[in-house]
Image 1 (cartoon, rainbow, N blue to C red):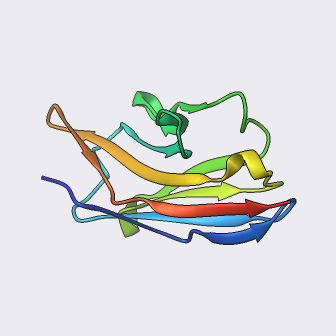
Image 2: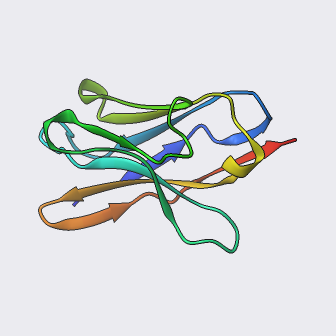
Length: 115
């Protein structure tokens, strides 16, 4: 079992930056699949950025060139650096992982970008 706790959300003006953190309750050294998703009001949850096997990263087209996903295995933490934020980035951001065939989600952290 894995528990995920996100932090780092908040209110920021358009053009600003935030860094989200996702702290896992166990070692993530052997976990390939970890990532970030988001859900805006009235919309479905969507992929933002993920790690896949081999350390390959995937990004939604809407965030490419602005967001960077990274991980620190020693700290059991995955990060999402968000730059050049726009109002359409406003959403609850969730951390996600797949461990032993099961999906786990954090509780989410709110990101609000004002124009």
